[in-house]
Image 1: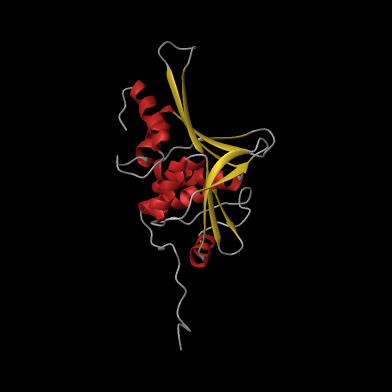
Image 2 (image 1 turned 30 degrees about the vertical axis):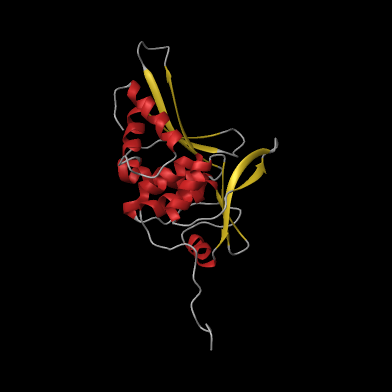
Length: 220
C-alpha cells in the first residue's frame, strides 16, 4: 500500500520556543509567503538568514536577489513547506502582507523574542547629543511597517506588558508607519528584548545598542 494515507511531513518543526518566535518576527518583517507552499526571507545581512535557519533548525541554500529601484543586491532563503505555510497563515501572516498585516498570534512567554526578530528585520536604534541641554544624550528604539494596523497592534501589545506608550508617526504619504520609544521607555524595552546575552539576534544591531547604552553607563 506504500505511504497512502500517511500524514505529510514538513521541513520545519512547528513548536513554540524563543528561537521559533524570533524566526516568526523575522518573517513578519522581512518574509513573504507565495504559492501556497513557499516561505521566503530576504535580507542584506547573511547573518540574518543564518540566524533564521538556526532558529528553525533547517538548512537551505542562501541565494541572491535584486531589490528596489537601484537593483541593490540582497540575500534570500526560500523553501517549500505546506504545513509551515498553513501554520503561518493561521497566526496572521499572508501573501502580499506588507500593507494589510495586523495581529500576530504569539504565546505570551515568547512575545519579546518575537519582537526582537521583528526589530532585527525592520527596526532600528539611533542616538545623538541634544544641543539644547548640556550633556543630554538621547536615544530611540523604532519599529517600522507599511501596515498601520500592525504598528497599532505592536504599540498596544508592548503597552499591555510594559506600560509604555511609544509614539507613532507616518511619513506623510501613509506608506510607512513608525513606532518610536525614547530614552527611559527604550531602555525598558531593550532590556526585555535582550533578556539574556545568549539570545539569538543580529550581532551588528546588538553591538550598536551596547555601545549606545555604554554612553549612559547602562549595561545590556
